[in-house]
Image 1 (cartoon, rainbow, N blue to C red):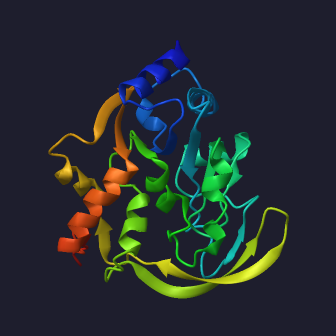
Image 2 (cartoon, rainbow, N blue to C red):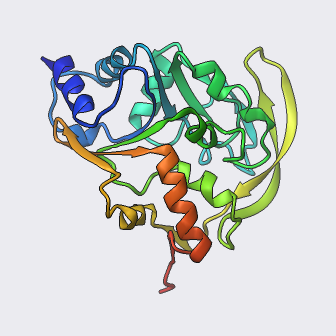
Length: 249
């Protein structure tokens, strides 16, 4: 019954079994379900048995200027419960990036994560977030609304708006085989700004954002290629469209 409900929800969003699916999710938003987070993620992996499931494993709160070390095998993610369960309970492939890694399972997991170490920004051209459009990927926002959409950072990096980049930092990276090296990165810095990626819904006049529910969680499914087209068009007109200045008190 549980798996059938998950499958039903994904089918209602037009997710295909061979899709590449990047998921941002709130486990709490599902409501009172009788299964664990592991069971939920197993259902997603089973559904995408011909595709790939990706969850962000961001570490920007744990890997900082004062603690500039990232171990791809051990460093915890900082963006909620489900990403950390995914990282620790599944045979994931994790991309090599100190603050904006992802974990992936499935057919294209290696392909989408293999080159992230080549970037010197959080969401550069080799980041899995940036590769989704070329691979017909989709983005599922499960119970978390449209705001926590990391793919938007990859689009912003094309425009380099005033609010996006912070200082350069040197990080110590410990890779998959335990090899340790240092690399310089330009960080993101949204100090004084509030992210408003939910405004992508302003481009939804033709209903390109699919909506449905999985259990009690309101879900939005975005086609990555369409997201990039719509967001780029908006940013070309107004580079600050997806942020607000934080009012000082």
